[in-house]
Image (cartoon, rainbow, N blue to C red; front, side, top):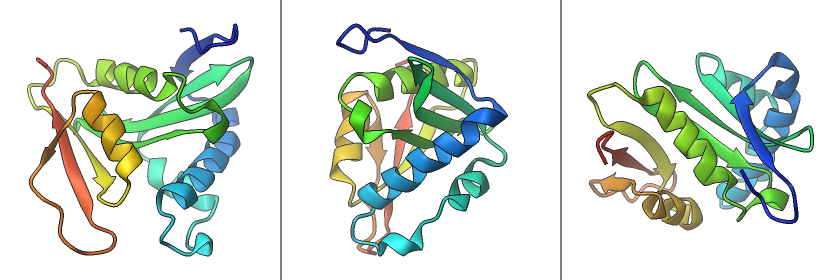
Length: 153
């Protein structure tokens, strides 16, 4: 997949050697996405806890992991999607999302994900990619918005 400036992106299943890089991307991405939280609320070990039971796909450019998506194919849920900020706005998130949906194909249920209600950039990204919010989030500071995407859509 083209990523601009002659760089091609490959999406593949994550290997154990990718974990440290994914943990860095996850940590920095969460600190940015949840900017209203104290930075020390998040740590590198959070990645391992959050993807323990998930399938993980990575986006790789020039031999370096630049983003990842984690999902539970059996439940039809995408749990995490994070891109290194240097690599944002190059279609990598959309490509990872498409690949993740490929793993969810065949399930009669619509795919789901949750996004922080206050994360306007992520919400706009998901909505641009055809996801629909289900209901209204609560007024709690850490409220999540549930999104669904029909496999037929």
